Every structure is written in C-alpha cells, then in structure tokens.
Length: 138
Image (cartoon, rainbow, N blue to C red; front, side):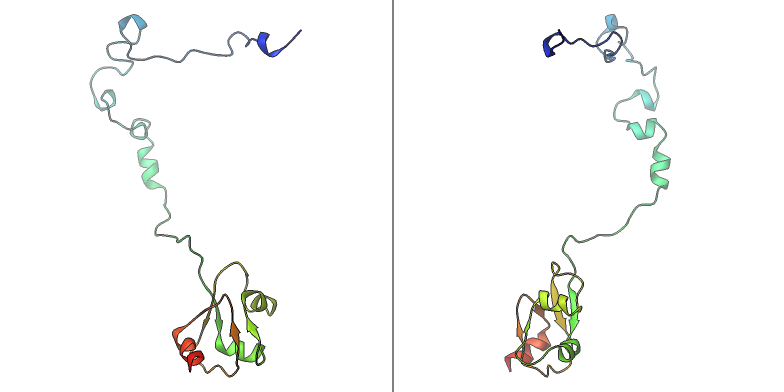
C-alpha cells in the first residue's frame, strides 16, 4: 500500500550539488573550477559582470525620480461649491462624490480658490486653503 512513509523519488530525479573548494580529493579543489588568474578567478566579481549582463543592465532604461505613497489631494473650487450647493448644506467627500465633483471618496479632498464663498456651508473631512479658512473665520 502506498503511504507517505514509503514514497521514494525515482532514480535520477535528484542530483547532488557541486561542492566547490572543498579540497583536492573532491575533484574541485585548488582553483575551484575557476581556472588560473584573471578577473573572473578572483573573489568579489559580481555574476552580472561574469555573465556579460552588466552592459545590458546599464543599457536598459530606468524609471527616474520619486513617487510618493501619499495620495494627492482632489481639488474642488469655491465656485463649484457656490453653484452646486445651497445654504446650510454639509460638505464632505460622500456628498462631493455624489455631485460628481471628485472621483474617489477614499482620497483626500481640498477646497481651493480665491473667490468669495457666497453660502454658509459646513465642512467635514475636507481640507481648505488658507484664504477659505479666513473667510469662514470672519
């Protein structure tokens, strides 16, 4: 009967790893299959250099610069708020998404603009420009 304790690998399925530099009796001693002298025979030479991939690696174009993991703000203008809302409305990402002023509820929202805010609005979970904060404080 076949069970886990009597399963055997078929012959030739596994091969022992070549153990290099373990003495002359191993058959791979002295120069350890590296040959005599030269850059490739010494330690500290990267495989990329030895395999001739260094030139190819240097030729491939790389993406330059830095990409922040912090999401960019979605911008809503004061004029858009003036046209789409009434007095006493609450402004939050869900409402702005429903009115199609932003693309995502999960990304941060910032209200920008130097125009006058004509309405009395309440803001929740929304960042504001300094000029808008001054208008609300006054």
